[in-house]
Image (cartoon, rainbow, N blue to C red; front, side, top):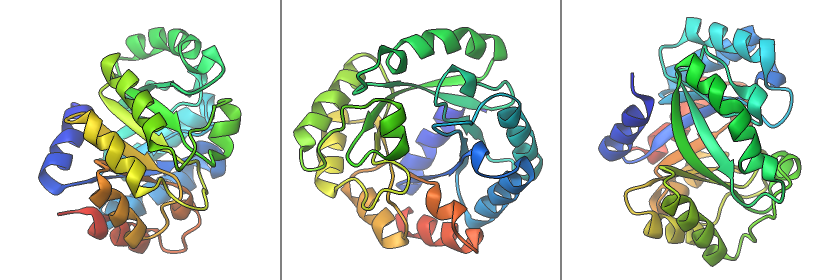
Length: 247
């Protein structure tokens, strides 16, 4: 399967893609697999696997293997650093944290991880990663110069830079557990300049109404993670989110 093509076709056909993010460090591989199964039953389109801390190595491999036993949805790596690469995934969001102050998150970790991606044969999906206030753990770990949430023109500048450097996807991230999602004005402004390039939005999306607001503003893909980890009924929560963003 060509994962990027698969995601793009869903975005064109159904309006918005739903991605379930699972952090290997947050639960056992077996528990992660059950979350992935429940999310699949709820209608999610793909499973993202990764996190800001402790999400690499053997734990990552074991989590992916268990997830693939329970779902046939594509597994997409969301690496925090070069250790977040595993040959058991279908694809990797090969990203650069454009507004980081640390060159390691812009190019160095990418250079260290690229040979592993090449040897593993997993599909790389180029992505500009942009962290917006409040930023959460990923903002702190990635030493991001956070985009002010009321300054869409700054997000637009970074998104255009990523587009002009050839990145296919742009990810606006408010941080896991954010008190509020990316504002609709920022989503709309960024999507306007991206054109056919795909826009991913994540952070602070806890219910169907918020997910729909992001989708209507221009998000091609919605990522939810914390709300899934904290849900007592993952399938029902995913159904709520998915039904809100599909045409």
